[in-house]
Length: 255
Image (cartoon, one colour):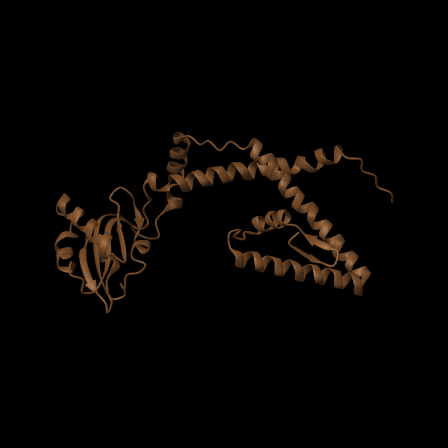
């Protein structure tokens, strides 16, 4: 037992179950203290109402039981779904969905392949970075990687993966620059503010209003297809669950 209010007790094992369900960090002592304080407050309030107004306390219990039925229905559906849903989705199915729904994925932002490095203003390698961030040869990338490990506040480079332009430059002060020109001209630029120097090299881009590449959307499409399967199954399971469950229990109604 780790807490009690009068005759109501909270065991550690019960606390773990509830805390995990509510998203508490079990390794954080402060989170334990917060949860236990909340539990003791709620129990004290429940017992106080039972002492002051028995009818209202009974209503609280009845409403809790009504909610527990809805919650039980949810967990029973989840159990049934876990047994029935097919989570395997073939490459052919993903590609078919992509071709049929391309326009639905039209870009609201540029996709780019790029190099970005942010270094404190005035570092000794700033001059060298101006030479190497343009990536004219393999040695340039090696140099930039080395400098990034030592000096960079932020660094990004992946010539295989696409990234949204706004995500790439979220910590760059671009207010005074034409973002469209930066992307469309595959700009290699650098500029400074009071604290940092920013190096940006746009290697490739995808236009706004065009469909992103299939590879970029695969995970999103997988989630869409799986969600549709689950929703379809949930409707089927939900309509049968109550009927099947009621048939297993001795239910009597006296009006």
